[in-house]
Amino acid sequence: MRIGVSLLVAAATMLGVAGTASAQQTLQQVRDRGSLNCQVGLPTPGFYALAANGTWSGMDVDMCRGVAAAIFNDPSKVQYQSVTSAVRFTSLANGESDMLSRTTTWTAVRDGQLGLEFAGVNFYDGQGFVVPRASNITSARELDGATICVLTGTTTELNLADYFRANNMRFTAVTNENVNVLVETYLGGGCDAYTNDKSGLAARRSAFPTPNDHMILPETISKEPLGPVVRHGDNNWGDIVRWVLFGMIEAEEMGVTSANVTEMLRSPNPGIKRLLGVEGNVGQGMGLPNDFMVRVLRHVGNYGEIYERNVGANTPIGIPRERSLNALWTNGGILYAMPFR
Image 1 (cartoon, one colour):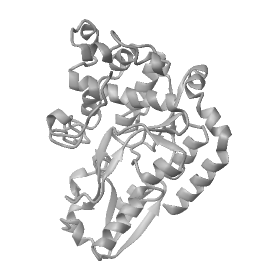
Image 2 (cartoon, one colour):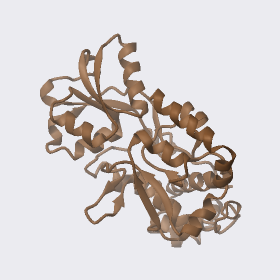
Image 3 (cartoon, helix red, strand yellow):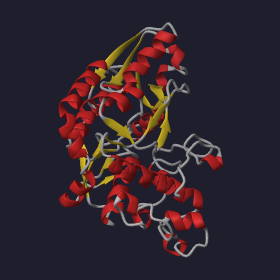
Image 4 (cartoon, one colour):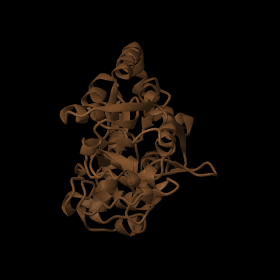
């Protein structure tokens, strides 16, 4: 959304040198506080779900837990901040959050103009549409003239406009910054379709009163590489978040899990030795213990474990991973960690 971007660019400029100086101290600030301030979205099944007892779980929540485990050897030392998409970047840029982990798309404008830095990709996604089965709509090309619910303050708005313009189609947008309001509007018949990243559609559809009464259309109309975000200017903090993510991916490729990580400390494999800090000093270079990935894997698990328990084929979300973009590069996907050396 152009207005949101302009406001955020102005806010980033106002922070100026003082903001950069503060950013350089993120790791120490987190340690002094005794917890990580990690921003997630409004509760969404599979990615950032809030239980009745106040505990959070999900794919992106596990990214927060992994960073906390690397720093404190305790994944519970996280203060979760749940805000709308419209204000998420401002909350990160002004220092309210230490990191953002909430299905956020990596784009040129966000990376280059908002004073933010993407630490990697933890889910490759794309935008789609969900419609009632009773509508008999089977393709996005049949949505000409439709009323479509779309979340404001996101890349989803621009993608929607681009798709309809490219296909010489018309639509009427129903917008809101609160995803829960949009979903209720869609379920109440206030729009013909609801558009979001397909992972988000699957998550929301799983919580519908009658999920099978709704279908996700086959078209994928955009590229949505989703990943954690930090403030620009604190390279060390960005490295910590980035290498926790890479470590989870690398661990899956090497067969290191939460169940066998202790045994793997005795592995003769030099790559596993470096990953687990038995050899080398990767952690020391970031202000962490060299075995920081042992902490992460014991408490949170590798990427595959995180995926399967939160959004995999055997969960209510039910997003198959095999041969998808989110499969390891060795298994037909494009998921790939930089080497631990």
